[in-house]
Image (cartoon, rainbow, N blue to C red; front, side, top):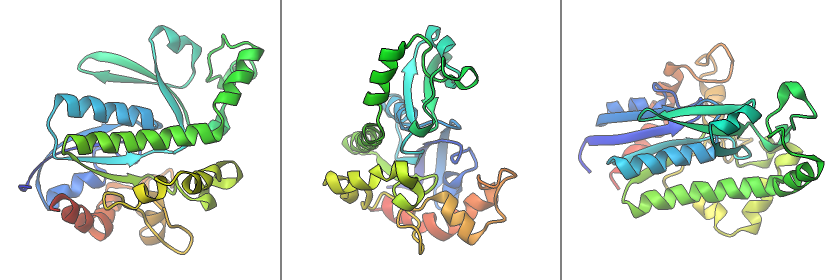
Length: 257
């Protein structure tokens, strides 16, 4: 591949314009397009990638996957009145709307809590029971894992390289707490999950506590002063440090492989 690299960076709040992909300019002549949507999940990230690679040509997709237990799906403009939390994302002057939830553990119904209503108010008690049953934690986790794999397969079919990482430790029980240990069970139950995460186009940060750590764990261990005032998101200097010490060489080898 030539040193002229057309790449797309997509993710949640850990993928702003000056995130780690910005520093690919150290090793390539780059043309970058960035979509950063704080709080978003895998469906919106995947939708953006699918849409972009259909309409534009890219050599590399850099993805910062979000919380694996996040619920998200597209809704109509009229349906937004039933939700408190939703994204409005503009594509070529066409607005799209996305319901999102920062984790199934936060699932709350409007008529139970007026101040934190994030599920349609029209659901009656029977519908709520069915909804809670269908959207159990294992279903959501497996759905998101399949979607991440689908996006990777789609890029492969189009001969586009895709480089994956996570904003923080998403795939390990120690961080997932009691409710989220289901992800570990899914790894053992479905033969393809662990080999998929062990491919060369994934980066995970490993230390004594994590085998599947992400950006947050690396920054906390190696440059904890390079975080914003929220004590969570890295500064541009933190992202540059991550690129120089972890990602740069790995991406260079992957792109040129």
